[in-house]
Image 1 (cartoon, rainbow, N blue to C red):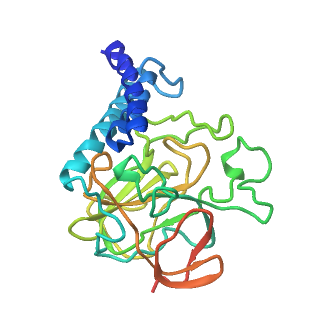
Image 2 (cartoon, rainbow, N blue to C red):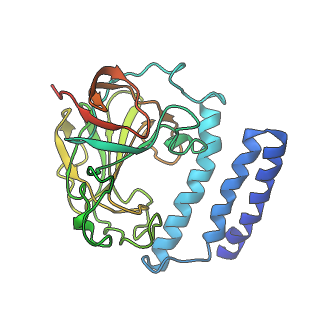
Length: 281
């Protein structure tokens, strides 16, 4: 089975046809390149975990088509979708938006519908670094073990907390120790269709359970380095449904935040800026 999946990587080359024909759907074949890793098991995971990890990635690949079909090949965007909830940032203090935005150029992962409007946040100091001391030590990162907050009122529908932290390897690279790319994570239902997903949490740090009602600004976990991550940070997204793999991502309308020192009563954010909550009331 693994040999078959590994051979699927050759479908990657069809993506180049999409580039020449300017066909965005054919370019999705580039994602079959992920299948080339089917025969390369991470030493950080056992064989069963590697198979689960591979299965999730293949399901995410299928989710590209599923999400497009569900939305009639017109995925939600800031012009076509009316947010049902306005969100706060899922942390205290000033953090840096390292990935994410509301257009193709700034997007976290434009070709993956579920993560199209996702954000990655970490903390930096005045010297533009995210840690002090030895890079390999998680506790040296400024955002490590910082509180993670509920971005709005809602009901917890999923909590995963048992995955270990992913060890720091070469800069910008990740050797995921979990069988789930999200690592430890929490999913909250905020309205009929809007669900938040916060990932890469510290092992055993979630302090809420499935079924709990949470309030905006409530501490729900701590920032860690679990899952597919190269250094401690918070991955935050809003999705149209509870499934991470096949739900379309939604543009996040933030409320009462501060961007680069300027108050923003309401609006969208993009990578390359410092952000913090103005008020959680």
